[in-house]
Amino acid sequence: MEIQSAIRASLTLTRQGIAYIEGKVSAESEAAVEALYACEGRVVLTGMGKAGLVARKIAATLASTGTPAFFLHPAEAIHGDLGMVRAEDVVMALSNSGETEEILALLPHLRGFGVHLVAMTGNSASTLAQQCDIVLDVGVPSEADPLGIAPTASTTAMLAMGDAIASALVVRRGFTKEQYARFHPGGSLGRALLFRVADLMHGGEAVPLATGDRLMREAICVVSSKRLGAVFVVDKEGSLEGIITDGDIRRILERHANPLEMPVRELMTRDPKTAHADEAAVDALRRMEAHAVTVLPVIDDGGHPVAALHMHDLVRAGLALWPAATD
Image (cartoon, rainbow, N blue to C red; front, side):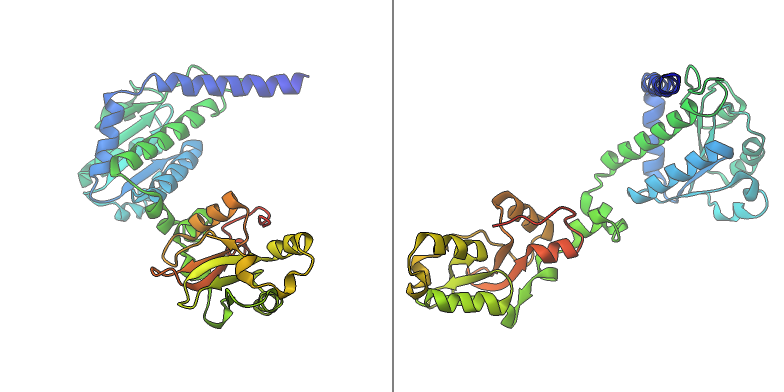
């Protein structure tokens, strides 16, 4: 169909544009990364129109990955917002043509602050490029629209280069997932990395315990009363010996004629998977998934079960968006 062909053609031109700027990665690109890394203030992104929208996104990406950054509208800048700029900042100006009036009008004032200037432009011979300290050439062979004039492949190339610079800064800083999570406490990744088992486990009277000499019928009462789908079997010193889950009970009833009067030690699953209170909740979740269990005994350094962690609590906390495993 003609419409599908137009979509594919646009995507092809966009892909070719990104491949084209990949070949322009050079020492100048590395210099830009080093300038942003060494920045003692903030990285200021500026641009007009579509380039301005891209600049906003790059600023957000930098800020979320350890490089303080914000967007400065060039037209608003010369009407007071220049007060947000400091000498220790680095300014990255985006303009495909490199001749955007509002950007060029801003440059002398930025120079007056003594900031480091980085250009991201599709024209390395432009006025913008000539007036900046570092130039990132993101020029593409053509736009991706049928007319060849709408900012399409060029803005995508700018965005891709901005993300690539941010990614290089992650490497340069040694920025970690844990640091990323601190900037995203409301997101699923933030929750996954910040929650510890201790934040979600059931302790105290809620822990389902039974000694190994208790009868199976008594253990089933513990499972029912504690509502965690399992009972943790302990020895006389309180150390974990095994576990009996809801699923185990069904299988035990299928295999034995009269298991209710048998000691739980003869029926339990030995060496169950466990968790520790100070470990990341997401690690415990992965263990549950790998071994198809829904509850883990939380043990202390002496091997005593001090709490229980249930899959449902992990799901409610937003750590898993898929159905819970079944034991």
